[in-house]
Image (cartoon, rainbow, N blue to C red; front, side, top):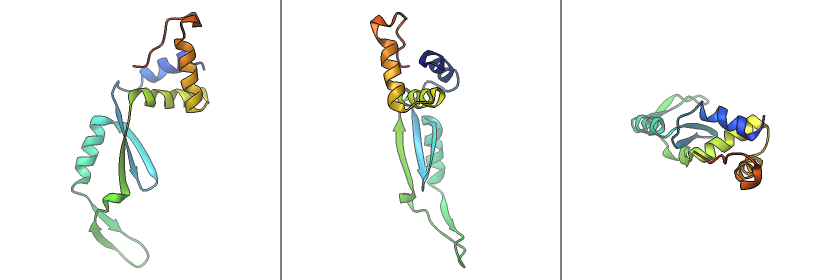
Length: 112
């Protein structure tokens, strides 16, 4: 799959909006920005359940276990394109830059 094909596929699957990356311990989840805000609002009332060795207890939520960062639509597209093309994020950036060069012989493909 080339860059232009991957870009077309990515643009048909997700809304043209920014995203939040919500990390819970070592797992990270990417959600559209508005959905991420709703998730964070739900966590404002959350408590932590500890069912470790010989202990079952409910504790206040340790907010340090949740981190949030933003991800732009352009970055999201490039990560998805890289996955579809089977290349690195930087390789996808280079493919985008090559597709946008005036001498590429094609209509420039600008990020959304």
